[in-house]
Image (cartoon, rainbow over all chains, first blue to last red; front, side, top):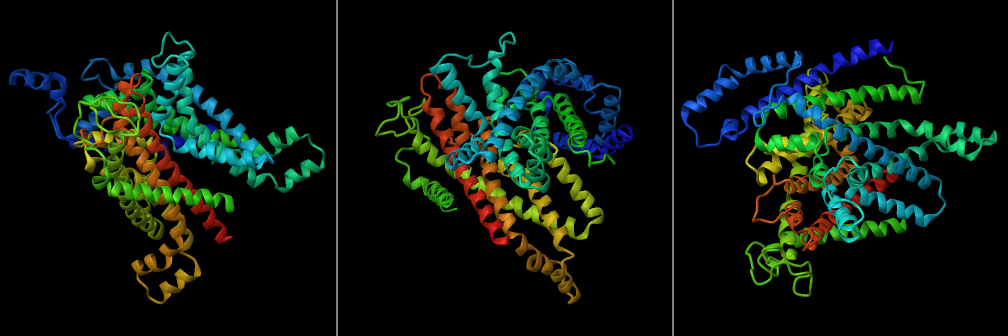
Length: 310
Length: 269
């Protein structure tokens, strides 16, 4: 059954995939300026310009034909080569994706632990001050611009205290991961804390929880197995959405910390009008989102056996 | 409730103050926010310059006040436009269903399927950077959320007795829309708008931070944070103050939005 579901979901996502690529394609077509000048500069002879155009097969036909050809190439696993670096687009992304993956993974784990943890404590604490404190903390987490929070952390931990590196990736030491991961994860943590709390409040007094309590189940197991597990669905949705967007490269965090990931690659491509890279990035991003969505559907079933994959 | 409504009131007052100060900024600024002053480069905060001065000797406070004009007006106007677009699209899609629903559904899915910031960067880099490009970008990204909300509400309301009665009496679609459906959605929409203005301001400052917004020498909050990065070691106030202003503006908007939501849901139940 899961296999059929998988196939059907993939088929269903085709219109979105085609829509997204077509839209990006048209947008790039309409954009002012000609990428050819970004490649060769503006002081160039007509012959050379014509030659490069010839090489890029730039002016051979109308856009529907170009688009179909591009999609055909994709089906053969060819995303084209970068205008600027002449490197195959697929390689450009493949070499940076592990970096983005590492940052995204650590950040989301951090966010899950602190977010759900604070959410649980916030629900079960009887301390009014702590409750208020948590409210203010999460509102701050949601309101603070990522780029400013990152710079703030750099100021405190790299400049004033001097305990952590300010930016870069070093040789992959964990120390370089700490500040970017906190910066990236803080927002999700705040949202998760709120979502966990709202969701827990809804089920904490459900009859099955009270029944479990009456049967003398340990508080620890009562909260985690009987309450949290039933409150987890909206929380998983949120985690999936955030993780999906982290995997697409967190543009601001990567820019601030000089992290060589997918996000900074894409921003560079956008400013340089490196169309094949932009198209490739958009395509990759959409695929990631679709995959994350499908994985989430399977997680729902794991958490709540009443849900069926149809 | 009393205690949280104090916070709510403070936030409302802060927002009102921000709006007034930014609107009247050209009259209020103590120094010229654009003209360099070579006598006072990178001065730390003092009585004369409460937020210090930047690398060209310009008063940060004056620049923050001027920058508010762009950030706040962009936040408000783009959200208003996105709201109108979203309401109409959402209503049409929820009320008529069929191919309109499929089309609007596909468009919202495409818009929401993407990390908003990446989409914003792509859109605004396809245009000449400035006020208009940011405005169009924010509307193009913001409408989808409203459309989805409105669609759900319309689906819920379109078969309720009062709408059926209006239909039987021969009311046309637009009358039903603004008389019988829109008023019932106003609470949820106002909450969404307040929160959305915050998101829009955050987005604008992020785009300006990346250099895609209103161009220098005109000040924007995000642009100032970005500009201060180069002098982070010698003059941290160039970054810290504008960033703090962004944070507190959005914080206030979020508190007001949440406060409105909890009041609204209490009234309903």
